[in-house]
Amino acid sequence: MNSSEWLPLDAYLANFDNMAAAQMLSATLLESYLKAANEVSRLAIGQADVAGRSWTYRSPVQESQHA
Amino acid sequence: MDGAPVGTRGGIVVDHIFLADGWYVFEAGLGLGDQAYDELDISIDGERVVLMYLEILHTNPDGPRWEQETEPIFIRAGQRRVAAAFIRKTDGTYDDIIQPYGLSENGTSYGRNYGITLLTHLRQMNIRGPDNPTGVSETVARQNIFFCRPTSPEQAVPCAREILTRLTTEAYRRPPNERDVEGLLGFYERGAAEGGFEFGIRSALEAPCLTRALFAAFLVVLPGLSAQTVTGRVIDQSSGQPLTSV
Image (cartoon, rainbow over all chains, first blue to last red; front, top):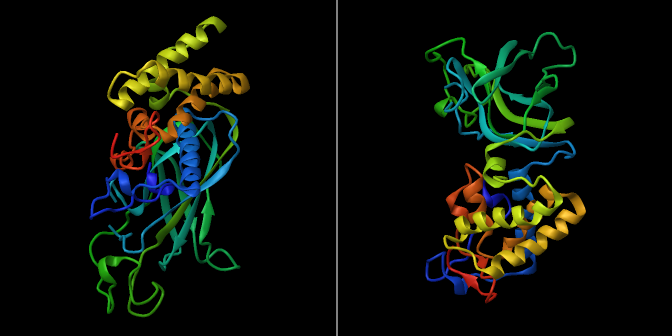
């Protein structure tokens, strides 16, 4: 599970990314959190009536397929 | 490829979360290579579920078949390691005129051109489903969440309170106060009224998304969640201010 699928990186302040004063909450970011929360809780608990969907995983072009 | 079965080459290995027990189709997106045939092994948690015999070039009058899929395969819910990798048939290097860096796709040309040999590549893998879901089996994550189950309607709220208290204790790294749990129980009750006990718990676990609980809670219950998620931009439930960490 990779949080960057839903959430952007934290903002930097004085080259630190863990400073509360730099972390502003926009409407877009709030929506991202809500979407992430919905998806993560669904992944954790599962969903018996889930509709079928497709997930795509791509191989990096620099990854050898011979080894 | 790390995580792929012994005796294979290349491919893709992913930890995929299957949301429900049901029938899933695996589709291979192939590329490069000048082989007429190849074999793709698909395994779940180290056990082969299907061996795809790929007729790529010669038997199809419409041209190479770069997209091929399996029959539907029944898989139970939960996080599982899916590996799709080719059966290794040769060892050693190729004595080519041109050889791309690391035998990757980062080359100067495609595999069917003069002076270069590339084996079939797996460009991408699609996992499609579930069709006809039959329910949700017990998973590690569910066992970590539902450590009690109500056997009567009267037990539902106390059980939910126990679950949420335990999860928030681990997530907050301190015992939750009454306000923490009561707030989440409100979300539980609205969810439970809509979709039953499990949906109520799920709603309550969604709710702390703007408190210090969200990803920390799931760091506890979901194997494989990156620690990077437990950083900065989470909001303190009481003050409404961002926290520096949880």
